Image (cartoon, rainbow, N blue to C red):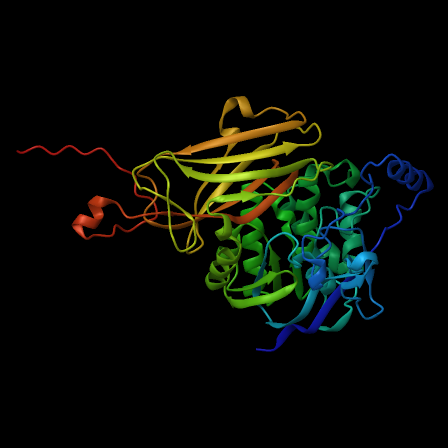
Length: 465
């Protein structure tokens, strides 16, 4: 089968530096903040690169970045002699968002792209969508590309939903009669028929995503690129989107690139997976193998069943710490220091987080995934009635107790997510913690291994007759 997409030694480099705000008043505001020693209120990213600037990697998750397409040689971090025999490091001026990416996608394939935050996933999709250009290498595509990278991508807020459908179609090179022939189908799929003649600026984020996906999935294109935006939709709409992507791939021969932290969705939709880590392609394999490799690389093995986040004081939401601890006496596996929990003891999942500004009703929760990838349990703090209201700025700690005799023996991974339902995804990080349920004494004595991921201890009553 011919390749629909081919990446040939593609790299993308950004240059560290301050990016102008675009307005004089905002530039003055930034200048005053600098004089007062306060954080830059308009910084695109933080001030320290957490992708090891010295090694030349990073996706711009830290440090104000400017795109570098000129191909200048990156200045490596060097060590300079200073007075008194001391040596001082000079910061590297460049970071690599992607480095030497090589792979191809056959026509009609649905490819899942997974990786931790800052691994380079969104940069890769932006290069494919020609939002930005690679610093080196080539990207070859066969056919038109339709992209849904952010909420409202390609929408003009002053135009109505109907007018934006025509606008998006025109940008993809379609004629007016082609768009008109699919218009009713697009509107029906989006579920926005009641508001289709209302300006898009009055849509919620969820409505905007619904309309944007409906346009991208129904217009005449050969390659469909979908980023994490589906996370703001409800479960019913997400299922429809996944069904539509399967349909256009199998029936229409479209190639789909799908980025998500929801490993359940990735596993159910994709046949092949690509794992990015620190800007490099580390795995391209069947999706089950790709998910397993991703978890092994990122499941907190260095610190056991604990995970510490990086708190940005200017962020609306940030996770500080996550732990998975058995309520009995915890024991640890000597090989990787991951928490080992007895099958008959309850264990607690604790999430500590900071809310930086007043937020409407939101929820914080997790998914527990088995070592093979499927989601076993999903839960949110909004299950408790007193956690369904708005959140004021401050520090919070949410604890969920998982009863004993629930999970079968084996390895499990914890994925964190937080958001405002149907509106905005605030946080999503897959595989932050790894823990193990060990085999029970009864099963070991009976030399049996029960099938099934869940093994609740039911009540039994046996009587002689």
